[in-house]
Length: 169
Image 1 (tube, rainbow, N blue to C red):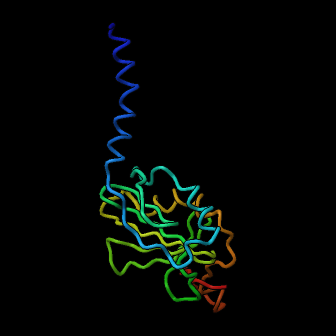
Image 2 (tube, one colour; image 1 turned 120 degrees about the vertical axis):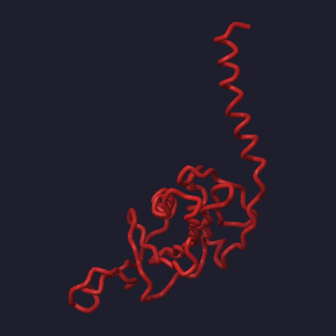
Image 3 (cartoon, rainbow, N blue to C red; image 1 turned 60 degrees about the vertical axis):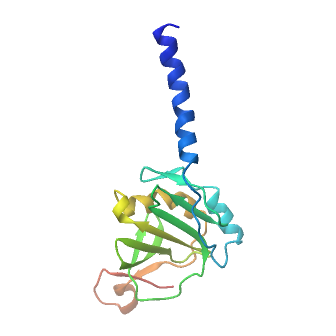
């Protein structure tokens, strides 16, 4: 067998080996959200990317969920209860409004605001380049749910100055 043919055969086998190794990662056990059967969740799940921040997608055992990385660095659950008005920080990334819970850093919980069903994304920043990058890569999938409310600024609500966004109507 000449060297070009051997190199070609090796290149053809490498993706198969990598796919097999990725399949060896155990299934990620998650609890489905209360409204995981909402048809909107199916729209999100079929659009999930194969990787998030260079972390490969993993198999999960619950409806309307996603997971990336080994160890797991990003978890997604669609169908959580849509949050109402709150004083929590709200950030807009690529057209998606996110409420942020940083009380368990380096694990951050991001919940969509103004979309029903709502989606929760938990990011373990100790295993990622950037939690923001993960949210940006999930935006196309999550954007399939129509936004009905949006974050507002203090100026929008109070008529004064300020730039902190808070969830509004």
